[in-house]
Length: 208
Image (tube, rainbow, N blue to C red; front, side):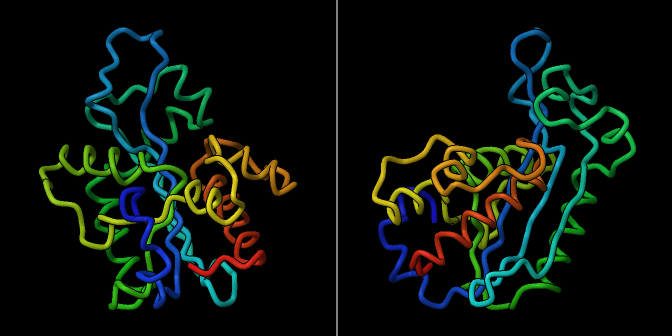
């Protein structure tokens, strides 16, 4: 659930069977490219892991790079941060095509009853800010019902461990003494690392 709704998480989530772990990467800059417009940010990596809560295993993976349209050239900072190369996104599909494949994936891999799963992110930016912005670029003004609420793993971690809310994924891994696997700010690698945090929290007694 979003932060504002997470207080009722235990009561509302009794029927959960799956977590859809999501971590977008998007076009970005650190100020070195004055022409970059943050209002025209676009998703360039779209990964989702379907995580089975009972088995504590990832059952299905959706992963796609995306060709940005509004600002097609990645900034040096974006490539440095994410590791995503210009040639990778240049050869990728635009967002609307990837979105169609994603919705098909969700229909095929998850139960029709949306109360049996929820999305899980590291922070609120992905579904509170970035996806609504991206959808608006292609003329979609309404978020899908199943993406209007989500679990924020930082909020979950804080409550399960009775600690201050962590700054990010790496600090949670460090707290759990889990090594970072892959590259930080690779969307797919971040999803895999978040799934390891989820497994650790489940093993310590968390019941989503």
